[in-house]
Length: 273
Image (cartoon, rainbow, N blue to C red; front, side, top):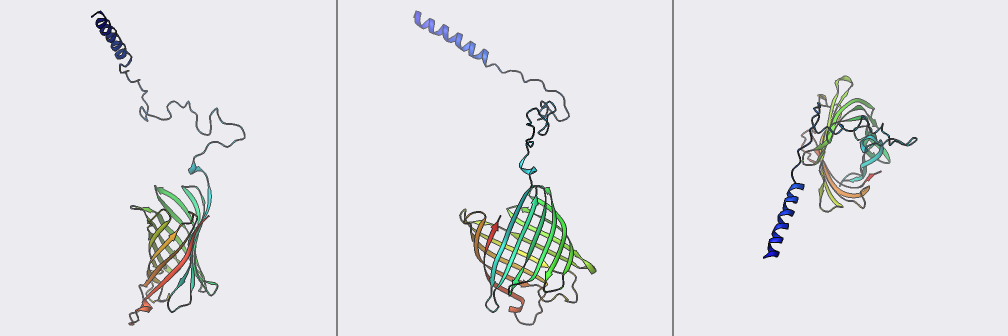
């Protein structure tokens, strides 16, 4: 009995000490600031990443990833196009950009190669500025070159990642003599594996919204849908094969269905440097 009483006595003392040490402390009082009690800079002493006692003379100040400038080349399409009745041709679409994640210069080019010559190309020099997460506004100049007479445009557009991961790009072009053109495209990536990827792509190209006299030819306005299946040997090099169909929106109804559409097979490579 004596041992039991001693055990209960020491147990009560231990429990009392445990409760005393684990009493909830009153929260510290916060200073009244405009930014509220959780101001992340309230105790920095006025120091910043470019002004603090830990900077070493001769070494660059700490910077975040978005502050650095990068140079990159992305060749989205570099391919051979073949149809049943036409000689194979080449197509390319790529861009070179330099700048930060928020502001950068873009040099973009897209066109066709036939008989070892660039038959037509669209070349743009654009300034891109981030206006929202995943979205950039672009403005600049476009120049069309090739076998036909060159044309110049003022370019305004929007590019980014739409909901459900659709990569989108829409541009409005203003030329001389009241010429107005529009180009919009959307692309999606469907992953079968981490390396095998199917990319549906839809593009609408209105070369002149007000071409009443059909001076630009049959193929001025068209709708293009393509499917490309690529295998990423590694992320920067991915060969692909696919199918592409173009429907000419301003083709004359002369009973020739093939004249109003073009179906082709493609094979190429996607490169990122």
